[in-house]
Length: 244
Image (cartoon, rainbow, N blue to C red; front, side, top):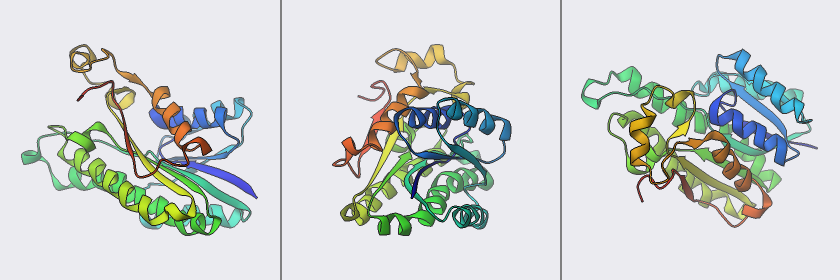
């Protein structure tokens, strides 16, 4: 039996950092998913393999239920002895703007990727995980999903719903030794935040800097370990004290 961890949106940013950290800290075979940037996914794959760990990339759009199910079913059929013990729901997008001018497609696209992406991937594996009687699910939420952020009503709604889903699912599966937790990062230095005015925003952060993707990855690594067996249904903020 080979044990796997799947990381959605694993090609760049926080997702890549998580892949590299799990490769360093665990013996899981890694499934690195991406939607369109194959070069970035292959770069992440290369980093993992240089650490001496097994990994592969899978291309699908997590918001597309049919496509997600098809790709994961084909993978499972080709890997009958594989057990996915860890699910990291990291894939997400933002499309910021004031709600009064927000077109429906920008609302639905953000919701579909974060929330339906969580459903599509987690629901595919959850019955197998329950039969296996062990698992770790970590959902990457956001400070926006905890406190709300002006100009991000769609993103805040998606991440807030992910927080609620985390709390509910954790109660359903706890007796099978499956933990479900969420991490809510603040301003983390990635491609998604590269267009922000960091000089102005750090004034809002008590520790006086943006976080690094590796710091989020460290927390993920702890939550998927056996050391975190008694932690479930939690939302752990990693934001430099931005709203303390």
